[in-house]
Image (tube, rainbow, N blue to C red; front, side, top):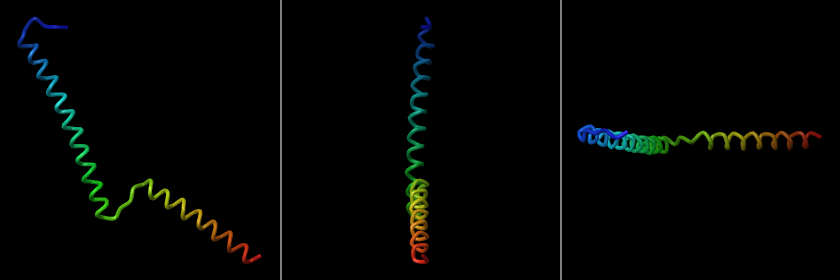
Length: 75
């Protein structure tokens, strides 16, 4: 709904622009924080959860293979 008052129209435009700017700044801050946290994690030799789960599954498979080999040697 358009208002007849040009001052209110300009205030609405400014408010809308400020909200867009605030949203863009929030996205930029989130991106910068994520990049910094990734850098810290790599500096500390930390791994991501997905990498940990993949390694955990690989270790479980190798343990099963070793257990299978051990039972074949006993037989």
